[in-house]
Image (cartoon, rainbow, N blue to C red; front, side, top):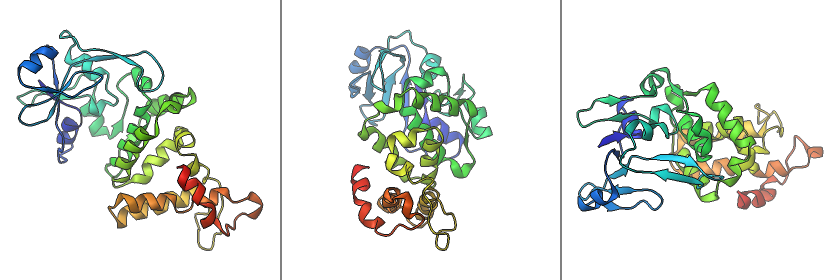
Amino acid sequence: MYLVGGAVRDRLLELPVKDRDYVVVGATEQQMLELGYQRVGKDFPVFLHPQTKEEYALARTERKSGHGYTGFTFDAEPGVTLEQDLLRRDLTINAMAMDADGVLIDPYGGEQDLHKRVLRHVSAAFREDPVRVLRVARFAARFAEMGFEISTGTKVLMRAMVEQGEADYLVPERVWQETVRALAGSSPQRFFEVLRECGALEVLFPEIATLFGVPQPGLHHPEIDTGVHTMLALQQAARLSENPRVRFATLLHDLGKGRTSPTLWPRHHGHEARGGAPVNAL
């Protein structure tokens, strides 16, 4: 059994470890059940520890078999190795493990990328799951104040995934799950900036994407661009309030300006009324 993923990453970053996930190598589902573990995974074998209720998953590999993030086939046979399990993960900083003695297992350079403050994909299989576009954006937002940046190669992969239509298969519930976690972080604006950089903002949040390039009067908005203004406002909201509802409201506050006729720019009289429809759509 190995501690894996975010718990290892956060321990190395000297951050509080909230959740601990484990990978079990060389075991079968029947053996886990006989030991008292409760199966909770619908698509692949994940179990809850009988006492701690922490998650234990059988080591597995994944292979793309369709579009989106549900088209996968899994292999969780006892012969799957720890290295194979770690290879399927999204980022190198999330593809590390620790054994019971605290020895780090790091086959893909995650510790080095932690020191370099780099978010880098583990393998080309990254492109098989569009949720990873959202996850990278969220991690970029979470670790922005620590100086983390997305590697050039990972940015290229993310843009290619969007251009190939993979983001079109993301359902609203999954998008919201990642978004609300990003809104709870210290730099939520970075989440939306990353999505814009890879082209996903226009696909997932067109109501926000359309704000970029829309001018406002410079007297009260020296940044001019409404999209830039929205990101700055969200950044300030995060500094003033930890309430994700406040941050989400800030994100939506100027959506009506995206519906102003260009013939009226940079004025936006009545934008508060025009904002109702895009707020509901988003």
